[in-house]
Image (cartoon, rainbow, N blue to C red; front, side):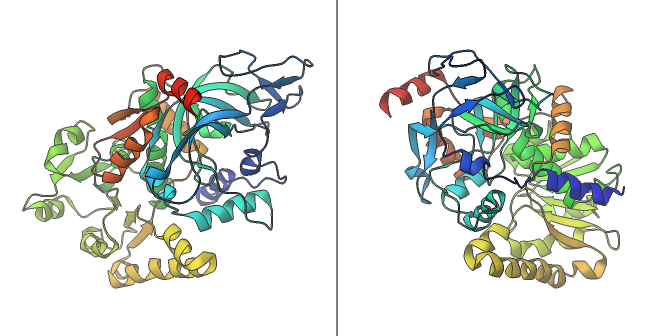
Length: 436
């Protein structure tokens, strides 16, 4: 089987379409009562101060249907996020899922955008397709949060790689309810055991940005097919979360890496091991970029504006299948603005026109869009690198759970020097139970 066919298989396996209506979205509006038959799942029987358990039969376990979570009840601003202790707990039904009690989570730019309604058309369509329904699924209340670290408290019978009590790190697809909540249920392929040397905060900040970088480079950049060894790669914005991970992955794969950042982040970025670090505010920054080029891949991890991409395409190697990858994809914005069909037409235009106007296609190069994809083999690779201490997770600041809005605002301000983390500290959780 060819590697290109393998790519399609691993992508589509990560976006399962359930034949039943007991999918994640519909399950989140059910009462959390699980009947655990021996052929279906195993459940952690350890009682806690906020769970209730009854022993009706040997195969049935019941616990609280409510949990603590930050939720959006409409698409609005960060200030309208609500902390509640009455959020419906996720119901784990599928035999390949694990239920995790979250201990820490990160805040990503996508969380801030989704709170304001970004991506609602396409993500809502994916949710509807998963339910195989003609009706639009219930969106609110919406829980945000894409990656986390926590303890498995229950698992499906087909889950063989993990046990109840394992501390894991994981990711949640954007079309699922998120993990800024006390509990989250995810397929086992989207979690990995936390390396012992990592703190829960570091583990919580690895997989979303790590998988964004991995997906962009491996799948969009073609490094899943062609080896990265001796490839010359430019990472624009090496000080952010995605840039951090991209540099470390590329160096592990054997590429030559040049990256840009401002003067305040140079020491941080140098510690990640790139071959060249360029202060983009320097007067000779362009000259330095040219001296280290031409490049096989240029990854924009800084989110430069679309009209500036043409400034960088002359730095790509000619007639070498070189690629400029931007993470500022207009796919979700266009479907929000023009609807599903109109948005897809606009996406095709927005992809084609810059390739022509920049002259990239006339030199055997291309401009492509990268995005986060929850691919199981990528998660395993990142976990292995973390276990071997070959990838670092710089943290900028850690916030308590009750201060989640402040964490969102820090991410919204931009110019991050690492990941922003929220910890599910006991005082915040206890206060939420008493006041909400």
